[in-house]
Amino acid sequence: MEEPVWNEWRRPGPTPAQRRRDIGITVLVMLCAVEFTVLVNSVGAFAFGRAPDLREQLAWMLALSLPLVVRRRYPLAVMLVVSALFIAAQVRQVGDNLVPSAILFLAIFTVGAWEQNRKVARWSRIGVIVAMFLWLGFSLVRALLGPAGNFKDAAGPMDPVLANVLYGLEFNIFFFAFAFVVGEMAWTAARRQAQLSFQAEELQRSQEQNTRGAIAAERMRIARDLHDVVAHHVSVMGIQAGAARRVLDSDPALARDALQTVEQTARTAINELRGLLGVLRADAEPDLRATPGLDDLPELLDNARAAGLEVSHGVYGSPREVSSAVALSAYRVVQEALTNVVKHAGAQHVDVRMRFLDSALEVEVTDDGRGRSAVSDSGFGLVGMRERLAVHGGSLEAGPRRDAGYLVRASLPTASSEETA
View 1 (tube, rainbow, N blue to C red):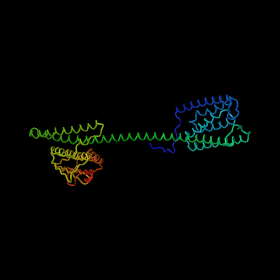
View 2: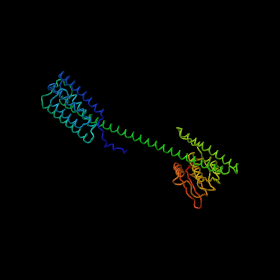
View 3: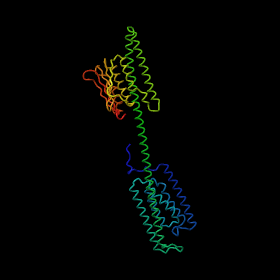
View 4: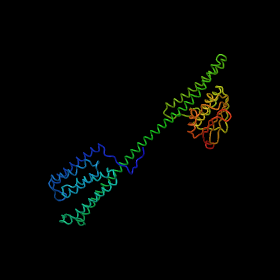
């Protein structure tokens, strides 16, 4: 999913729960409007000095409150209607001005918080606020030109008329600025919440993908290990069992040796399979120290000799410690190469060489067979080797030799001798 352009984000419409909440708010505002109107009329403290009939005042209050039912669905229309009714109610000089002001505040706030078109939301609110200040200015001018106000209890240092004008201006500036800013903050908070929700979903999807990738990689690793273990040991067992069958009557001692090799190879295979199954059951990462390494190569070469191959082994350079993971990968490459020689090459002699270079460990296996083996581009052997080496940033060269036989050469980067010292 492509990340939205958050500067162009549009707030989704209100949910059913929010619509029901608007109905509740409207009912509450109506009740407050009726109560305040009755109280003001009972006290006689009218906002404009006088007021029309109580029933007309209640009708104005209900008309101002009703649009709030759809304030989140049609915020712009509600603000315009409420603004017009607010000025009309003041023209009629309704007794209470507190609840109508609260309704106007809520309408302006809702446009800032819910209007989809942000330019319309901004300029429509500015237009309404300007209109309200023009109406305020008109009302002040009308009051100044009319009869002088009753300021008999005035005791401050300022002229009472000027103080009244400044009080009205400052109060309204604060009132409308607060409604404007709070609406913007509500919109920004909703957008931020949507952004956090989107990022949380993206993070969850990424974690799921990483988990699936880790599972796939672990399955691939286990598949390689199973292939290496089963293919090598079963191949040796098959060859030895066949040899024992052929010489069982003519040379029982040789058949006994062959069957002993089969038994030993089977035990080794079972131990390695148990190790793999232990990794599958364990929650922690496998302990590479318990896996085969360079020290186990002589046993691997003995198994190849038991299968009838002449094996020569050479170590070149200055032997040094390498990481368990690199040692395991080198062991598996030699194991897979020997398995293919035994199964497919028809070779008599195989040469295994290990070179400790300055910054790499190189393993080379050559034979004098037919020049092809199961280590082909379509087989699991070559794919498994390349995957193992790719983990360490290594490289693999595999193919028929120019004269005869087959070559497998793997290079595994390691730390230099100075770095490991």
